Every structure is written in structure tokens, then in C-alpha cells.
Length: 164
Image 1 (spheres, helix red, strand yellow):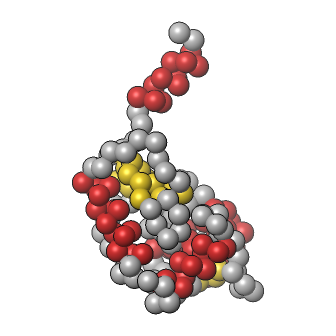
Image 2 (tube, one colour; image 1 turned 60 degrees about the horizontal axis):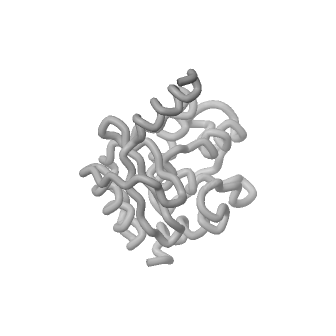
């Protein structure tokens, strides 16, 4: 077996537990590593392993889409650079139903509005780490999840009590 095949086999053997759900913004898949949530992706995961934490995270999302707040005690462990981790922590401080500008977040986390946008685009756990709450000073800005800006607007309206 060549080195490439051995690496591919090792990657297959270390798949993360994941659980998928249908949501108003499309199918979502939550992944867990070492007892912490490490990603939320759009689409249906191939393998389903409903661990207790993934069941809890799925229930939290179901409640969220019914208009309830997300719990703040879910163990989240996004993989990222120290700067991105700082940005993502700042995002978690934005109250549901409110927004902050990229510039506002850069004042807290450092860097520039552009670097905050880059960290937002790399957020591996959207919704739980609410990058949809960050907007441009002159408009919405972007959004890389689901259907892009349509999804961002939907999530913001949900948090403001306009969707249930």
C-alpha cells in the first residue's frame, strides 16, 4: 500500500461522530470530536452517529428554529488560528437579535474589518458561533452558509422574533 493510500485509510478510520437534521435553512450536519462540537455544515452527513452531545446539539437547533435561544453551555471547540478564535469568541458575545459591524468586532478582537470577514468566512460552527450577526457598516456584508445572504437574513429575522 502506498503512502497516499495509507493516509487516506487512516483518515477514513478517524471519522468524527456526526448527526444531521432538516432545518428551515436546509439540511445541517453537526460533528463532534473528543466530546466537543467542532463543526456545523450545510448538507446531510454520510455517517450518522447520534452521541449524547450531538443529540443535545440537534435538540438545541430544533428549539432555536422554533424561536428559543441557543444554550450557551454547549462545548464548542472550533479549530482555528489564535486570531480567528478571538474573533469567534467576540461573535459569541453578540446577543441574539442584535448585530455588530465587522469594524465593531475588529475593535474587540484586533485586526481589520477585512480580517474579521475572513475569520467569519472560516467559522466552522455557524449558528452556534453566530457569524450571521456581523454586518457591514453600509449594509449586510456577506454570508457563506446555506443560500448566502438569504440565509443570513432569515436567521436574523428569526432571532428578532419574525420567524417561527
